[in-house]
Image (cartoon, rainbow, N blue to C red; front, side, top):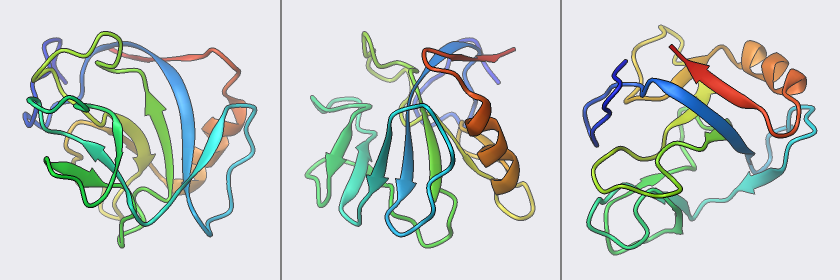
Length: 137
């Protein structure tokens, strides 16, 4: 964890981050939630190129700049909580695509996200009220 997150450093940023929305892979049962939920489709991505005008924003793939694929074969992004990290205003190289998502079976580190067991992530999402924030200390 770091107070001063940088793109590609693998650290989770410290701070208080509003929850923007829930994304669920198309075909996966959505979690119970009062929060805005949208489907992840095969061509969904998230721009992680600091020099691009869509840095740290969702994009459609293929995309001309570097972008993370949201439709993953490993299931880590089957359920995703989008956090308001470096989105308003966006600052070049401060980090992108900071989510809360499903953990790897061995709980290997993420590239800066927060990861939970799927059942725990679903339980937490069901408890989140509108206009909630996630605090990373």
